[in-house]
Image 1 (tube, rainbow, N blue to C red):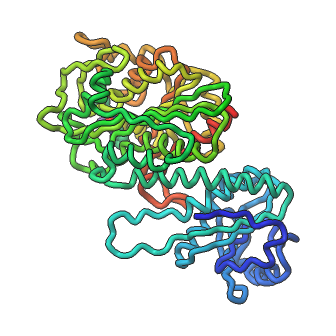
Image 2: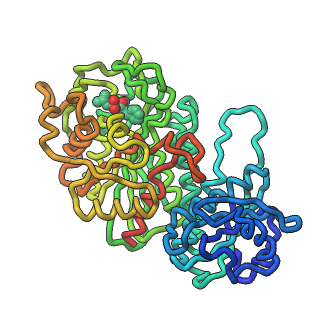
Image 3: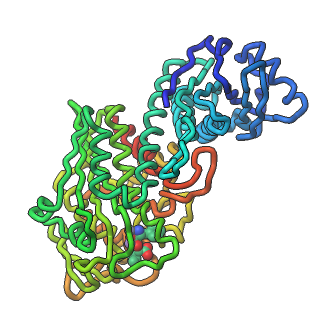
Length: 485
Ligand code: BES
Ligand code: MN
Ligand code: ZN
């Protein structure tokens, strides 16, 4: 979708087949609206059919032009998330009406122009998102263009926000696409080729380590998990290195393209959802797709170990011992606790790169979904500054994080008689013991683990999200990165 800024004064001439006007409940006939539009929206307001309540909508007609009123609630309380959802409602309605373009108009003084532009840019792109998949009917034409009018001060900041927002949402849609593909399409090799395609000609370098190289270098966790599958594993290494920078960030994503559980096989119910077990990896790949066009002034490296977890004849068995990249040995008690085995290698690799901050994203435990449900990702971090930065990024992106403990005592139950650590403990505190396991591999990195098992798919639907993969993490990571510029 092409998102453009409707320059000041352009609104009276706007001829898009659908014009969404975003109105606060206490500013229902604002001066910035052209007289003809003010006249058109008066009847539903006078009849109290539209009162500007948050995300309330009303569709009316001004001659040939459809006008969608979208409520923003009380202007003093307006938050970017409401703007994001309001813009998405407009795009969603355009999509429902089978229109290929949409225009929006808004002004607010509560949210600053850049933040407003970004929220609207994100919303309009996310609201228009669909995944047609393998349905054999021809997909409806997508909403291909959006013009967003802003008649307030700060037009150029607004336009810049709009651009950044559209880039970030497109990257999130890309991550959604990767997640929504079935595992027979989205294999590790395919993921790497999609990542490469999205970065072609950009300044982001991508190295893909394949099986032979992984064997030479000793990526024992990833290779171990991959043993049950016919699909070869890959380890992606991204590198964005601007001409000058002060800090290096490392993003790690679990790219498990299908998790059957392995020999510790999962029950059949809902197992199809395990195609989403690569959503941490998709978030990192998506973030780099955006980095390629945003070109931040901070170095960012990315690590995505990717494999299937299958119960084949060569699969690892409970009791087997694997040696991770970096040397720490792991006894496999449960082959379904595979995410931590592949992340162990990635964290070992991260340590070699000596980044200032490392963040991993992983659909790591069902226990995290039990603990936090679908509205927050688990945050495990013992570094104060990193915790603060991530939580602020999560709040700003509305991809919220909630802290859980990362105490060494949780490792007590992960002691092994034959290796440095075992990969599974008791039934209790599963999200926390998984994080404690990872901490052993993160060593003295300034590191945070985000468990996105509850937020990567099947979250409550709204104007921005209509089922399938959410693309969670992309917006959050981009805001986190922005904090270092
Ligand atoms: N990918 C799963 C975690 C998961 C399960 C995410 C359900 C979302 C929904 C992970 O690999 C896994 O299987 N974890 C196990 C760990 C256990 C065996 C220690 C779990 O959560 O049950
Ligand atoms: Mn598993
Ligand atoms: Zn898994």
